[in-house]
Image 1 (cartoon, helix red, strand yellow):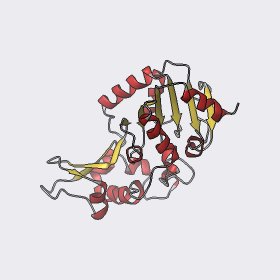
Image 2 (cartoon, one colour):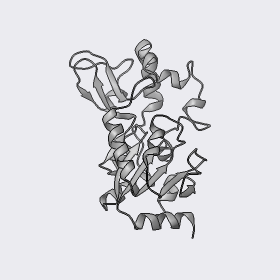
Image 3 (cartoon, helix red, strand yellow):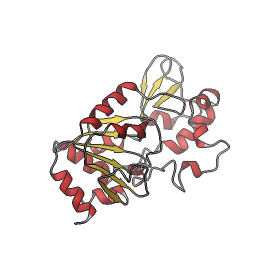
Image 4 (cartoon, helix red, strand yellow):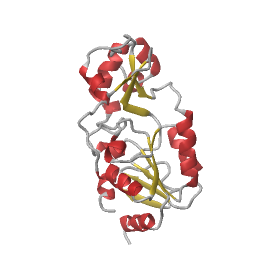
Length: 238
């Protein structure tokens, strides 16, 4: 039996899947990964991307932050791929209880998933720091320089967790709960090196830990099933 057949068997036999995903889920939709060879970290900027997407850089150099943000972090034309669509399909069938994602692109929701826990926020949501008014991704793309609120003139900040900022504790607690109670936990498209997000895997108590990733991860030895390859290609066969 192939790895993909084994995975299909696991999925067919459960109604309690939790999916934990990262950048590899979105690269097949054309969104660059931060850490791959041609990812954002490998690009040449005046400052390293980790520094640009930090809270202190956002505060001290907002013009340069927003130039990078518009240029590299927004992909309004990206469409969900087979992995996003399969997860939404499983949820509709009552199989997938939650998608926990490190991605900020909103593609899981675009595919139809309802229960999506976004550990690092979303570029689809942007808020005025002064009055709290909501703005969508198109408002951020259309302007130039530092985006300001059309109601009060305050600066509009993406609802994205920057470096040096803490994760939303309610989302963390809910993610822990889903992982702890999962029958099958599928980890997909993530290098599992970004903490504290990657540490959430430790809460899984079951014996059906599946890792689907192109490259090796620190959890491969713990996995009950390891499927190597592009997640969209693999999920399209399930």
